[in-house]
Length: 353
Image (cartoon, rainbow, N blue to C red; front, side, top):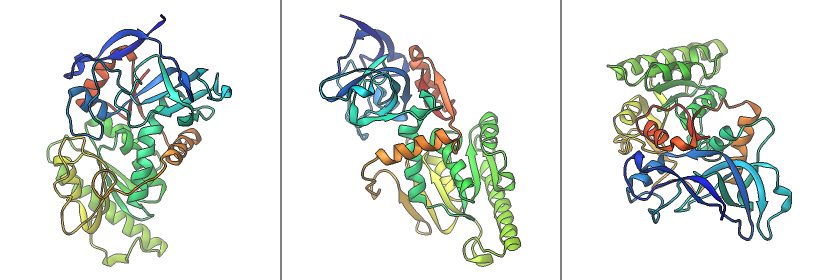
């Protein structure tokens, strides 16, 4: 029987439980295609499952298991009932809420109805970033309803979702305070939109006294936008009577960083929660003076069919509207990718290649 390289773990635990092994080649079933995978998406949820932490959105898989639910590559075969026209085409797919993902492998079987054809010029790693992370970024932006003139704070701004949110908020005409961890990430975020000018301030949240620096940044941005609206004669919201502070905070971190970001909101501002990568929910999510909008968890909207979100994300990346940041690691070094993700040493979406 033919065999392929795959990453598996036989126990729950630290990143080192992930090992490169030879496993039997999969065979596509009815309605499925066989995909030669060139890029494998790594999600923070993958690390939670690897540690064996129950209580997340997915049940823990039976062991041994091959992690991963985001794949891109070339279709090499089809099962019964799947269109043969897919063979030879470059595609990307999200495998959905499955216990045993199978994405960290050289070959994967995918339902034909889950495939998205790759737009010309978009490489597999960037495409993988779009079907999960890009999709979520669009969902966050829809819930946040960022408008021209808003002052927006973005946590983890050098991450997959954060970097896309910064670009989209600036494109919408907002002023943005971006929080990034460490000088290198601060520089990366600052370079995302070269012509942002005074509408973008990036703050290192790992530096001592960063909350004070962030408050000063918000004040500077607020003064800048008031000056801009005075020149154009178009108030950004309710004119100069609007209280100082941020209008929107996009937070996927929670914990102390999320709380520090939420503290920058003006009364009545919007705290948009799309995760808690710190392991702790944002403690200000029940603050009476702000409106909390959850993208995930209790009270989150029903987004319905997610396929249009994936298509929109792929189109933005292919057109250049979004600059996609990826942290690429060889498949054989999946353990390193997990470790760097957990230690917040990655920039953008983590992808195995």
